[in-house]
Length: 173
Image (tube, rainbow, N blue to C red; front, side):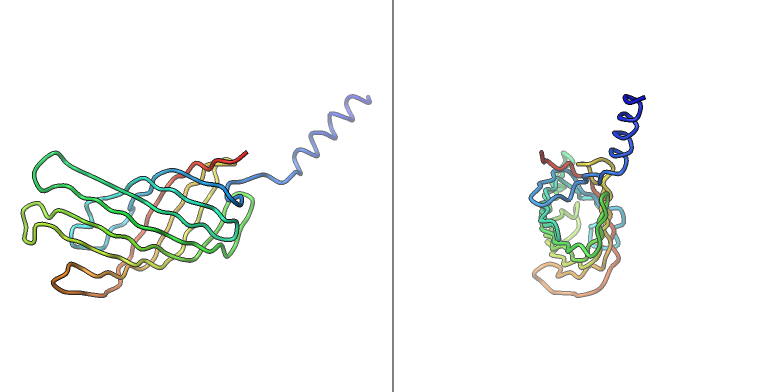
């Protein structure tokens, strides 16, 4: 009887213990991010995504991304890089909701159209949800409005809807 009671106590305590999720202070996550919705025009529908790194500082996380794509032909090389910041308005043991945004630089070949290359700089304020599917793997979904400066010849500022998804693996002990 004593063994059964001890075993039952261990199971109850294990079930009520708080789960450890990613998002722990000082953790680094590596993964990838990609566009789900591209309403940016000017070649942004090319699906440029790439490698991503996040640093989680508990109440916020910052990160960067780098993407490269070359189709193998002439004038079809695209690359992108940028940074993001999200302040966590709400957290649970397995998720967080943040507000912030990203700034991204895109260089896209136009595949024969003039000008040959477009250089785009976007500022995208928005929100992000991270759901930890295990204690150190997070799926992220971001959405917001994109404001951009387009090429050196002229500038245009407008709002466009954007959505991005990603997955990160967080390293901690």
